[in-house]
Image 1: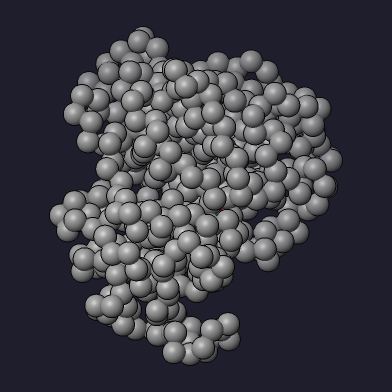
Image 2 (image 1 turned 90 degrees about the vertical axis):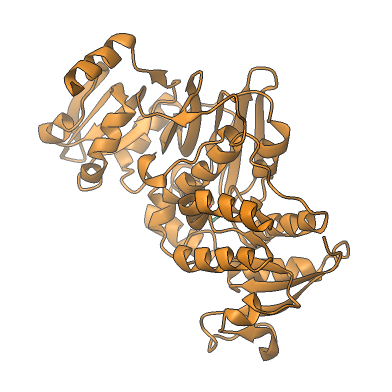
Length: 418
Ligand code: HSE
């Protein structure tokens, strides 16, 4: 690998500028940005005009540039840039979680075929070095679980709403102003962004190519005062948790949804734009990683770390994916315990509860407002997801371990399928 990196940068938004800033304050690396490809040339920029181009080929076909850093918003355009750069013999660093989650199988194959390296530590949990940790450190045992707060914006909003009594709308605006939120903040508050990150981590933790559309994500948009009151009375906070949990010997369940956490939970005090990742395994047991999950400098620092790793020729080996003896897959055949706040009987009937432990019918601020706590299957949640957001319903995981379907349930399902 060359000892001098000449970088072609795509995108000069929050993270792009953060990276430029960090590179300028760094004496350790011999890396310089030689060209920046942007979409809007009329926008005022902090650098002189010669740095910028609107033509992606000015970077992709430039023989002087030996590293492409992709930090744009649009996932499909990003995929085209990244794939072409890798095929042109250039190593690439990206932070685009949606693009990665949707294209990991192709990107792994391209790297293998063309011998180039794609690194993306900044795509998951900002400044927390979780991808390389999963890839290099936890490569000997099947992890029990990898879970946590993977989205800075929604954690920021929940902190402001729960701790500081701010309105949801104000907190979201502030998260946008601070550069934490995605251009379309539904990706944050709807749990899509943490789902993409979960899919990326699932590859490095378990060797699974999880398809984002097959993973359940449910966000915080429908959080109401009644839910906050319920949580407060029980001493809980609500956090948006992405989780992967080993279910059977070779099966893992993946999901993203709000969860009640009590004061003993390792992420109870993880607030604002901080992220936290908990890794559990048989021998290392529980380890928790906490750090800033959003913002130009924290995310830029992860990009910088990838750039510096490329200087010594680092590449992901996808060790779990290529493990011949253990093939892991994801399953939705699990039960989880949830709190569901709902308004009408019709809302309640949407859910196929296996077991109910608590049911409350009443009203809140003069409106019908009920809740139920019970066990439901992840399959059922996936099935009814399109309906959920249309109704005045809020679902929270109570935080108990996921449980694989009983043998009897599986047998019964197989009989019905015949
Ligand atoms: N919108 C993302 C977040 C940015 O809030 O976590 C970092 O990936």
